[in-house]
Image (cartoon, rainbow, N blue to C red; front, side, top):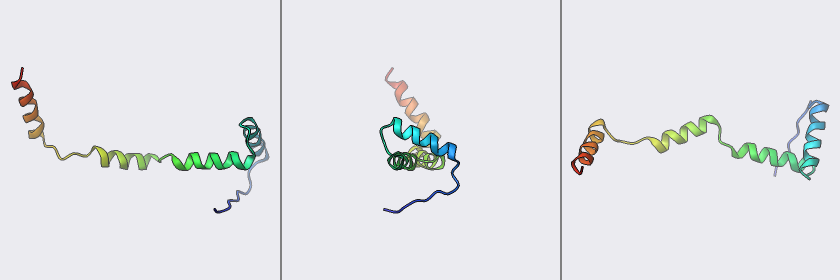
Length: 76
């Protein structure tokens, strides 16, 4: 596992994170690891769009759709 160093974090932000970590019953390190893991597990908008394009693309023509509609109407 790699180590991560973040420089020049304002003291007020560090204090806020320490308070949140304590409220969650975690050390600052544990809290930050969870925060990083949560962020890394969420797909970006571009990743979501790529997935949607992959999963929703279909090779169906207008003629196929109209034929299916006509077939459905025959049974009525």
